[in-house]
Length: 200
Length: 193
Image (cartoon, rainbow over all chains, first blue to last red):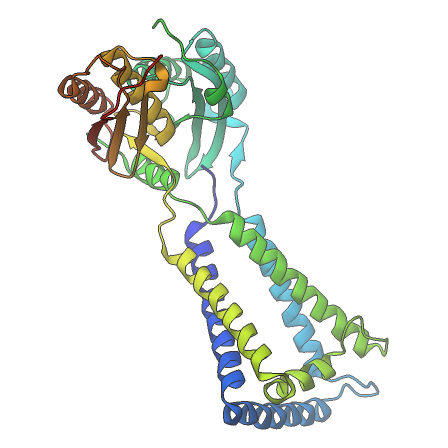
């Protein structure tokens, strides 16, 4: 769970796919139809000639380059910055602060590590849980807490949830407020190789 | 069950792919192309030699690409590009379901991996039928569970009882999407387990 903008990812990937399909279709048409290929070259050369006229007509005084070239460079830079923003929007949103509260005496901040250590300590003796990871991420108006645990092979999700419900209830009392909680019960390499707990 | 908007949203996000990996790869490739083009523009504007190809020549070549290339190569390249485009569009449209199930819980958003469910159900079936771990396998799908039982030779198992036990266990999980349980007993018994 993080702050990835998933809709944006899908829209941009879909748009990129459509552009690729259009380019591919053009290439296939030109490869299979000589008439289309000739038309491509005719139109392309015509456009290029017009672009060159345009470039020549807007020369920067005293220089050999055109204002248009400068504008294209600017556009490329903007596109580059937008792409970097797209990359940066993946993941992220993690926070070290679980919750803060303001009152007359000042501001109280509870760090994620507090909840993390409490939860890990509580689950350390549980034979059905192989490992626990706790993380917080930013939400609108606060933080959410994610508890990931690796279950032992054959562990019943119902029994795990009974333990976790109690744990989250304890956390609510500890923090004095109900923060959003995500629980992820996973299997993993450790679950695969660890032996089944026979006596439960 | 009182599911808050946070839980519904989180459950949906946890069970579907964010498409981050492909987004990052695509963005990095496009970024490299954009930076290269910008660099070539700067090089040609300052009168330096081009890195790979000068922008003017690139435009020239693109303009006459239709006739300057071998048609078969053009067609092949076009097909490859179009197929990649279709793959991208499918990635954007398809749900990209992750192998996880949502457990309804009044307090927390809970997701559990299919593998965890499968091993828990296999254990339930195994305990009911008094078999060794290797004799029972379970696989969990999007909306169904298949439990395959390989009984010990000469000791028939009670399929009905296993079915009931697994059904009871599944209904105890309060999964958001109900799972249909199928128990398959192998016709041949195992020897030496």
